[in-house]
Image (tube, rainbow, N blue to C red; front, top):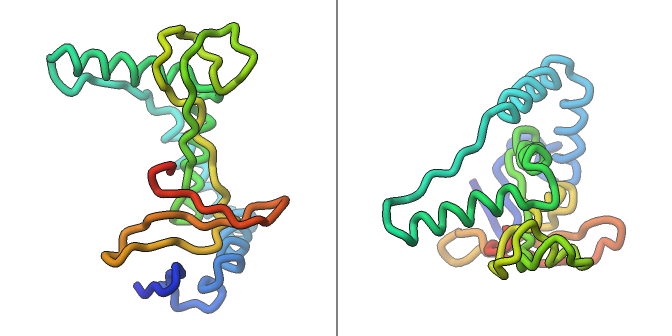
Length: 170
């Protein structure tokens, strides 16, 4: 794998070297190949039918509190978990999927502001949603000296303005 200036070069086919052409090629294969389309659908349906469970990391009070927070936060998303999973599973087609973590302060169901609306009034920070960042919007990656990803740099439609999403938000 070669990477320079945030671009990854690991494909020997010319159609897959350019990010825009690669995304279009993958979508074309998915849409036009009944075998590929059926396989992707079967995998997605199988994974979407799996049950999600949260287990405490230990028996201490902090472990139980963390368990309860994660469990309630998953049930308090502004979107169904099945939608989050569907978005994440776009990685089957593209090889990766970036979902931005959007937080909220849990301030009760009567809040007009969706960033604060929650089933809970405990004031804790929970997840509001996990939003897919389109593979088509990827401009390049920001790497550190060790080759670790530090950010996704994208230019999403409709404005096509450059946005840098730190890895901590993904």
